[in-house]
Image 1 (tube, rainbow, N blue to C red):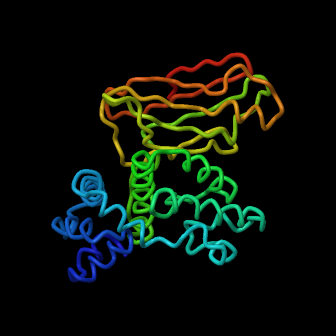
Image 2: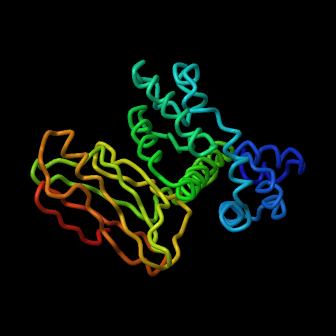
Amino acid sequence: MTLTDFNKLDRDTAAKELFSCCGSRNWVSLLMQTFPFGSQETLIEKAREVWYEACDKNDWLESFSHHPKIGDKKRLTEKFAGKEQAGVASATQETIDALAKANKDYERKFGFIFIVCATGKSAEEMLRLLKDRLKNTIDDELTIAMGEQHKITLIRFNELLEDLQFVKMSQITTHVLDTTAGKPGNDISIMLQQLHTHGYATIAQGITNRDGRIVDLLPPDKKLQPGVYKLVFETGIYYSAKSIKTFYPMVEIQFMISDDSHYHVPLLISPFGYSTYRGS
């Protein structure tokens, strides 16, 4: 349906449709205060505002509880539940078993299930992300999970409303090039961290794709506050997988955000040197 069609629904039906996009009753209730929506921009802006500024931990946890467990073996072998998780179709039994175990470990540690926007990600990538995120604190992980939930919400908006249009790139992107091999630095774990008074906190996490890029670290409509941030690249693990010694177990790039524009922070790496610049 179009946004015009959606606006013609009765309020209960419209609320149910929104709940199918994000399973938080408070989020739906607050968002419905703007119904009918004057434009696509109004819907997206209000959805983001309510999620990040008006909802709290209980609302986020409620939304997480409406997702199927990624670590459920039956769902894994059935290519998950829905198009968002179709990337697991080619998973081996070993990967499925590892995902199931890691998911149980994750839920045991944090008290909620692993939330990830799985669109375009393979089972191996999700397993790597799950293991990486198991190392986080519960506060950092809650922040990351709520961001992943908002990515999923926007995808579901797009499935619900056929004429929906929004910016599809994260405000922060990166591209890793292995200058020694002359190839993209793929399968490198990256954390995006924000500087607070008590130190850095992780707000997003991802893995470079086959082109060495991450274009979806943040939800496409999420704008960061001005301040100091850094990207942490797990270069040691990358080179270890290739049986190459490196001087840098990690590369950390600190940078300033001053406005709402797009920030591209590429990394050129070799075992004994690296460089960076602000890209476009």
